[in-house]
Structure formats: structure tokens, C-alpha cells
Image (cartoon, rainbow, N blue to C red; front, side, top):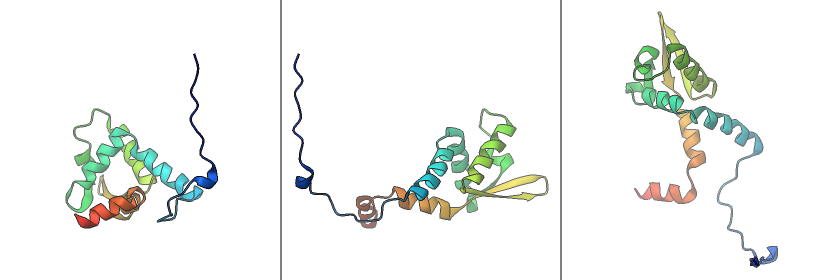
Length: 125
């Protein structure tokens, strides 16, 4: 059985598209990867969404823990991971801890994910 070979285009014949924004640096990519890793867990993604869905993007841990099939210590661990990733801030009020979304962190992720064509489509919407 013979294998067909694909023609290889010489590098000189390649016409690269112009760069429209600076690509991520290694340091920025490493930093953002840790944030995306924190979001890669379904429980953490749901917790972030539950907090972001509340008025003022703030909620007590007792309110967001409802509906999860994990223990309270596991919920606390996931919230800690989100906090350490820079997505949430927390404040103790009496015996409860309140979490709030850090909008600037979500904005930064949005800017990284938004492509130039996506930006143009969003501008026309």
C-alpha cells in the first residue's frame, strides 16, 4: 500500500496574516493557565456562576452551597481555589463568609478569549 505525500509549501511562499494584537507572553500564558485550570472543574464553574448570578455578584457561602452533591468542606475548598486564582474575593461577616466576583478578572479573561473577528461581531450587535 502506498502513501501519498502532501506537497510542502516553501516558507518563502507562505503569506502570514498580519498581527492585529500582541500574542500572550510566556509569563502571562502561565498565569492565565492557572486561572483557566481553576475554571476547568464543573463544581467551581457552577459556584462562580452561582455567585455571579446574584445581585451585586455577591453571595454567602450558605446560599451557593445549595444544590451541590458535595460536602461543605469540598465547597469551601473549591471557593478557596477560585479565590486563589483571583476570580473571587471573600469577607467574613459574623459566622458566614461572603464571596464576590472580581469583575476585572472576568474582564481580563474575556479580553484574552475575544478574537478580533469576535470583537467586530460584538461591536455590530
